Image (cartoon, rainbow, N blue to C red; front, side):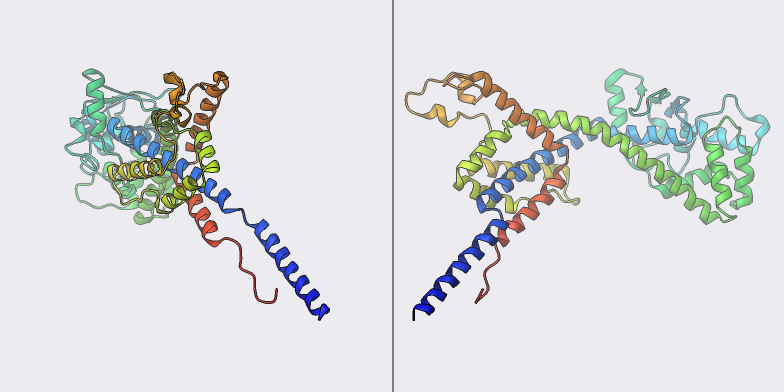
Length: 400
């Protein structure tokens, strides 16, 4: 009888130890809710910054400007200027150079203008024709990160012209435009022999187009289809570099936009974290809101994505997250004497306002740094945290 009770005590004790060990392997729900809340806020903030940046880039026509700069880097080397008004003339001049090398104009025309002035790329991805754009692409010089465009009529004219530029040219269309440019054969016969002869007829000053095409002709192994594919790969590889230039430039804009949004909405990581840690009701409610929050899908328009992210941020504020410049709780107490800065939480009515301001700035800085990984990273992490919260510790098995 006594032995049985002792065994029962040992069994119960073993079960408690097992629970303690397993519970220690999984973070408590409060810590998980805190991580979920902060990750959710970081993701929504990064998403808002990215969407607003993309709207600004579209408004300014940055994609079209970078595409034009990248194309000129590929075929002209960025050393000569390109006047889009003369694009059609450049197209005709290059074809005349191929047909009649002895009558070649000096200096040679811009290859970028020639490609854009042809029938294939002249109106692709835009309304109207390239020669109707009164834009001049200046030489890049030492830096090749920013497009240098000028237009008659000042900044307003430049802005309107950049907005109308195509933001994307498919590799297949580019390859067809190159072949059309170097094979002005009236009989319509395109063979590798013709292509090689016409490429060799181009002046040596048309660099890097001529040496690049000569190398691609050599790799094509007398196959026009393979030559076309090689040209497409050449174009795609370079445009990947242009995308890197664009992303580095836009990343700076995103940080500036994010900083403005963070201050505008008073998104303070320290204040938000303190609220989530000390108020379990708010933390649980935010976890519920975060479970429904998602990053914008590729099928959504920028306006729909912006509205979705704003709705998620509003839902977080509704359940008690300290978002916005409302009066802080400390100043809502009876007989609390607070000035405007105290009410906004920038200073403290209890003194040590300098340290309070430092904490506010640190909270803003943490939010700005959180923009760098991007919304996709944070929403991916949010999904994993949600799975961890739903799983919890493993149940014990009978007889353990």
